[in-house]
Length: 151
Image: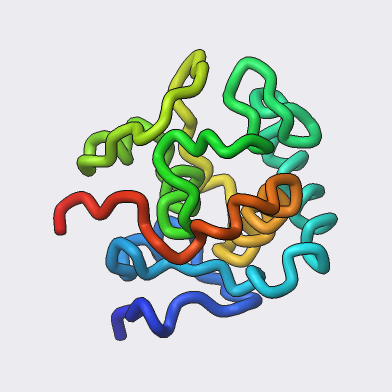
């Protein structure tokens, strides 16, 4: 059965991120931890560090050779769906699908795909929860996709 926007996503989901993307229409990915960001932020931070996100975005998300995750310049949009797809598929794949940059930020290279590194969608949602804990103002845009390519 295909995932529907109102059915996605659940806490503890073991679906691999790329598989979840494949069966969920654009705009249908929603972080099940949005109501408890602070409760899962530390777990998300540990996962973030284990994926070596800190190598580009800094240990606390404040930036490095790539954009900080702590400001309101979300290059492709700050909604859950876009952020999940960006992390899982990488920026080159997003651009191939018709996404464009909606904001400007210093970027030294493309965002690599982490969809095969993240074992479960749940892990990826917890990383996003950590990012949101560092940038609470990003919560105002979680539900409204900044763009819907191909629709």
